[in-house]
Image (cartoon, rainbow, N blue to C red; front, top):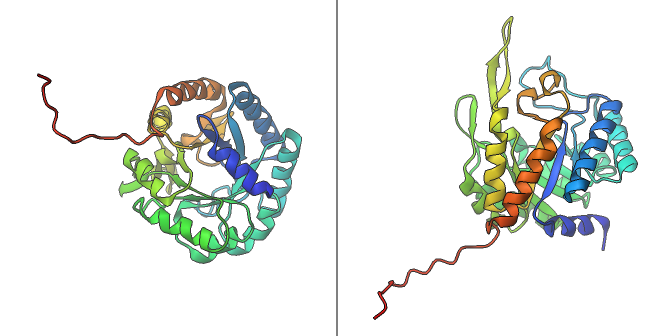
Length: 292
């Protein structure tokens, strides 16, 4: 059995859930190694399966002047150092089909950004790496669309696919998390992940001094969405974590503070262990009669 399938099976069997976590974007080698060390220590203490996440390039920033990261070549070198130093699998995202093959040499999970979840060529190129593919649901998509996206990966010869909920855009500059999607996305017949940080973005909803806009967010509601997701019974939680969110160059308003990660994860594990969310509720509609 190849290593991707082994990891995929471990994630599917994770109890009560697995965690994809890390800073939104690679800021420096030192920062990535420090974050990987701290998050690994916390998840090992709690007993959660961790996949470390960070992006080498944020190609869909609100402004072309915004920080994007170190780029693919340098970013992959940094991620590989964290992977080897702390013996953790890596997840990072791609934006073009040409990135998939080199990214697949380092990453254990290739993530498809929400805006690109229907891009067939990108999905097929990612699938052909043989790595696990995590597809984020587009903000513009119904949950049923994800079954089609997952099937594109399978038809390309890769059975190791996951789908991820990250909110739906019902109005301007805001996202809504519909817990029903976490149930409906199971129709994709693969693990379901809840992105509890991006789901609270307010896209282009923050006006900047001197003009222009950036994405805002509702960090205080991250526990609310996370509690809901584990109660429903998701297979994995995706969250971006930072040791200094107020000074994070990307998505600061929706990165969870590292100082509170252990506290929140302990609560989520406790909720997940008492919830029956992963079990379908059998509803009996036969008439209820008073016993004689």
